[in-house]
Length: 124
Image (cartoon, rainbow, N blue to C red; front, top):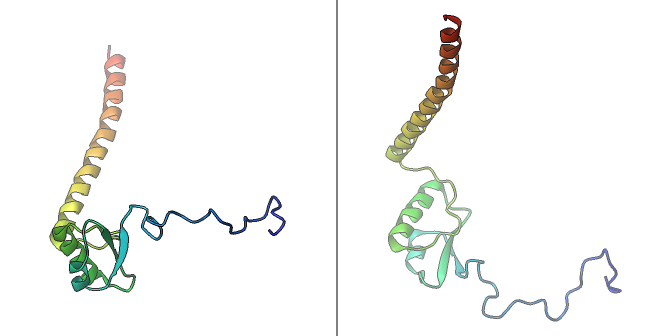
């Protein structure tokens, strides 16, 4: 590395730092604020900061934080895959079941038309 030979990692040198204004910011351009409680969400400046929910926050509190953030128009950087309320979950399952039924009927239609074509030509 000292000899700056090919195949070795580059050494730290002047010119590798980022601009002072953007150093330490999230790629979206917002400052990250770690959230543990709903009260932490109230202190966020919506124009300059975005929230990151701490890893130790449970699912129930995460859902509450996500709902409150939506009302406050606060960006959440890691919303995760928290479970939805029970009513919404049932609607999503019903919609998914309708899609699968529609796909099954579409798959059956071409087969029926092929059978009808072969029987109609054979009967003449």
